[in-house]
Image 1 (cartoon, rainbow, N blue to C red):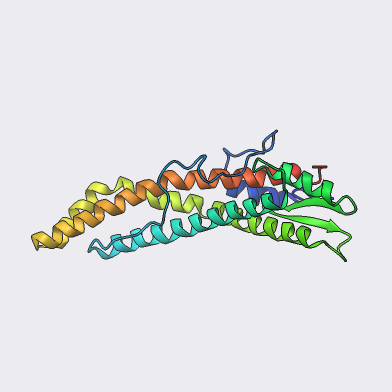
Image 2: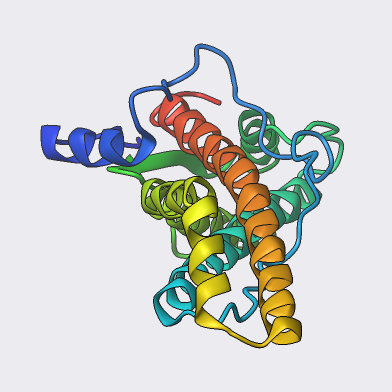
Length: 229
């Protein structure tokens, strides 16, 4: 049977990542659908040159962190969709429903979801001759776990980076203006700053949605750990 949080330190580690506002649900969390919850335009954060070294570094760091989080979010979503394809007949992207169908199909195997800290995996016994589709399910769940953890692990740091940028708009504008004496070049750099700030606002709105969906996946895995799904 799966083991749910085998030590207090694992609980604390997972709680630190999920934050105080994300709790284990009493019902199955619905994993992300591509167009259901993220209404802000998605896409990579492209940081443009603004002519002030430390500001360029801040925007570049925020862009790289957000793009990596988005990549992991999409990987988590894709893993769940791959798992759903293995569970033919499952209309909703629900981890619990999909695992239930897997267990029904492979009744000769003992199948459980094991959770340790904020990592989860599909355990199969006996493990000597695991059917190919069941192996693919294990791979999809392992990828989903890794991606969900990665989404959450950078969420707090990223939000702090983005908050600083959007709140410092006035001071950054003054610094960019004073750093360039040529009118045309100054205008170009200010336009770049404006676009960067637009990207920062977009990322600040998208990132918590990614974190919430990753938290839903982790919490559903925790709720299913050791249970008869």
